[in-house]
Amino acid sequence: MSNWRFLLLPALLLALAAPPAEAAATRPKVLVDLREEGGFAGLKDRVTVYTDGCARFSRRTGPVVRRCLTRAELRGLRGALGHLQVGGSEPQPQGADFLAYTLSYKGHRATRYRLPETWQPVVGRLEKALTKYWKAG
Image (cartoon, rainbow, N blue to C red; front, side, top):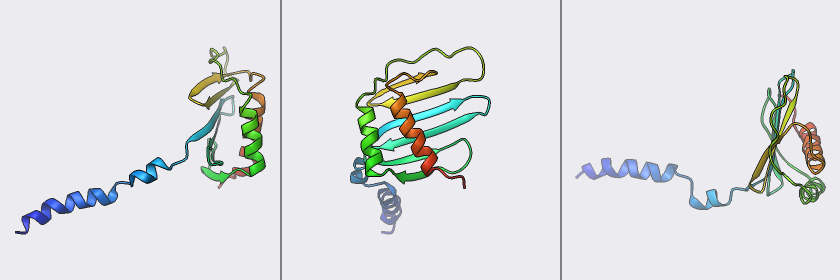
């Protein structure tokens, strides 16, 4: 009679541990993602902005910081994204002291070593937000 308890208990624990389907479906999607890497200093910055206006900021050292952009910041970023042309990746230049900018937007991703004109407003806004919101722990 008590054998059914041993069979039911693991199944019950698995059901309780799994996240609800609604929670997975309501997670915000990535709006834009920027990675800046390279240089002699070993730069490794990342900014991910989600469709709900909140963002994740990280650097090579220190904590990952999560903050929400202001309405004005999000509006300006969306305006800049409206003119963005991701295009293709550039080949890595020769040498060691270069920065790689990898930008992902609307399913497109490219790495560039010189910022194209349409990337400059987007990258500038994301770098400004990183400077404002990321603080070393």
